[in-house]
Image (cartoon, rainbow, N blue to C red; front, side):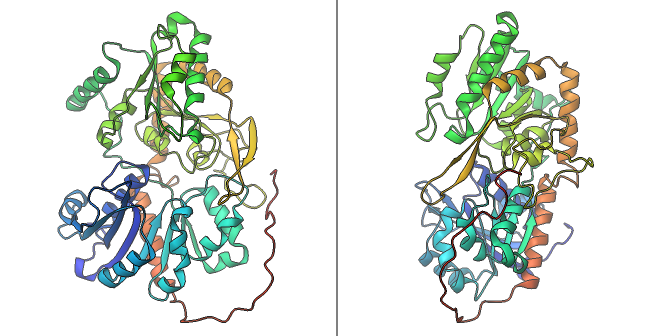
Length: 480
């Protein structure tokens, strides 16, 4: 039996608010790994969100499937599919019906404002655990009341953990704030070797599906949404320039594969961008635009040489971690959680961490990183925002710089790219990075157990002194 196994009737139950864990979004993928990897320890109820969910109104029992994957006989996992993320009324109903011991939730705080507003009601009974992330600086003081509404903040990135502390200030001492990076399942994402006959047959079939009869010598892979902050058009521009740099004859033996939507109202028309920038004779761009299970995405990583993500804002960048787990080199903008995966080191050779004096490495304070990573340092920082999120730095890297770095990777031997990629895989699997699914689940368990041990229910009422609100002022330097 699994280490730490607890019989079903003795487990605590957690109500997990997030995307439907059966689906393919990054949130779904990570939430599913957490549920499966901790089902020996907790019983789970997933309020599973989707746009216009076809199963809304049902209560689904996915215990048997979960138990089979988890390797336990008595998993208890139920799902309530829903369009959107929920409501006050629904949470009240589920707390009364399911009687959870904790509520855990995951994704942007803007989706949970209604939950934060009822925190006093919820936390009289059970703790609130937030698996949270924030893309960039300045520290979002507009999130302060949201962070204050939680008992535990599990921060996906080192930058997020620092942001939680900076925003909470003196109140941070009353919270559990732990680093819980995303973790990838090495049984799903792995390098396909020449000795894996069945996997090689699947790989060749996938190449045929995407590339036809073309067998490129160098493949650049992009796997993310076609939305503005992902800078997909910049990736295409960088690739087009790279092809010009190496010459038509060599470029004709290369390919850019985009696993994304061709058009998206939150992004752009990528086919129009390709028509503008690329000559199909030698600047070859291919789409993989169908939603496919993770096992097929593994094939896409394995047919590539380099995984690229040039996002101007990025909380984590899951495709980078998946690519590393497949033994592939990565090239990414130095911003948000992508910094964690590059493993920058300070003057003492230690993996960097953040505080009020050093909030991010997006200014290029440190240049040395893991050999598997090709960093793109932003050439421009612009403060953008909206009414609910008034300010955030938009880190823009240059597609011209990216084209030069693509050439640098192209000029490496196949053996050198493989060597560096495998170093990345070894590190992702290591105890230091904690970026495997097993390490992520262990970190979740540790944080949840700490929460249960320290949880003190909110009092029925509190007396608050009415004082003039202080204006929010930056709690760290703008340049660090």
